[in-house]
Image (cartoon, rainbow, N blue to C red):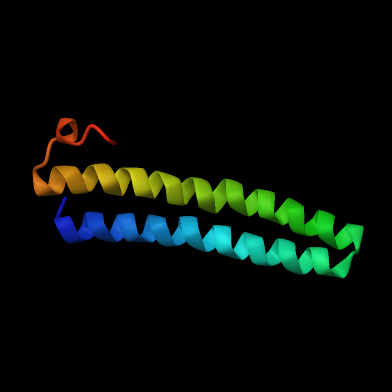
Length: 83
């Protein structure tokens, strides 16, 4: 794959991953401010669903994009033992 395509995949993964974490925190804070157990339970249920969907997808895109960037630049994965 071309470098810019793989980089786009990697950046989209980061946006999904971090964006979902931030939005989930905002939802939870706003739900807790109501002191209504029904609203809090509803918010927690939606947070769990979106975490499963978007955080998992974002993580997968980050890994795929990261490995793809290694291949696109011609660097071996064994050259980066920290990964």
